[in-house]
Amino acid sequence: MLQHDCPRERLCRFGPAALSDADLLIGSGAAHLSGPVIAAKLLVRVEAPGRLASADVSALESVDGVGRATSTRLVATFELARRAATQEHPPDALIRGPSDSFKIVGPRLRDRPQEEFHALLLNTRQRVLSAVLVTGGILDAVLIHPR
Image 1 (tube, rainbow, N blue to C red):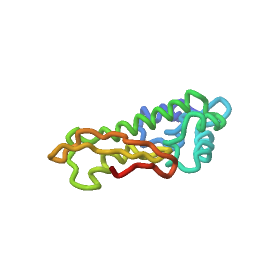
Image 2 (spheres, rainbow, N blue to C red; image 1 turned 135 degrees about the vertical axis):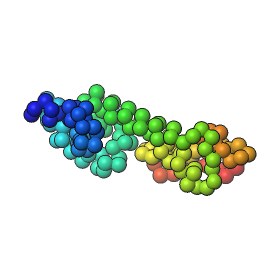
Image 3 (cartoon, rainbow, N blue to C red; image 1 turned 90 degrees about the horizontal axis):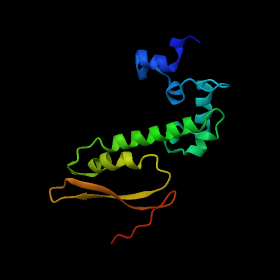
Image 4 (cartoon, helix red, strand yellow; image 1 turned 180 degrees about the vertical axis):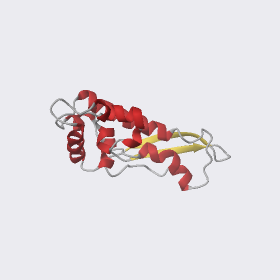
């Protein structure tokens, strides 16, 4: 493989759109496996590409060719993306309906391994003061009293 064929080189030269999902996920691979092979194994392990963002370090490390450095990099990257998506709304966002609420808490709740109940605290002009986690639950339920 020529140096300019490596994912890192193509990314620098042509941008991230020039890379496949496997190249973006793993890059150049390990000594005994190529990047696309490792990425395919990783996607099979998590069962669906959408579940990759919620996988933990140990689940990622269980894939042949994925070590501690790659697994922690992937987990950190997904968490950073989640935080960036959460901070896209202006600090004084106006809540006019459910879709406005979803824009704020949706990215925060995406890919969580268990249910969570969040509250948006608003001022009298329906602008967001803060978003807080009220309680966490189990895989498919969260207990909260309406009081």
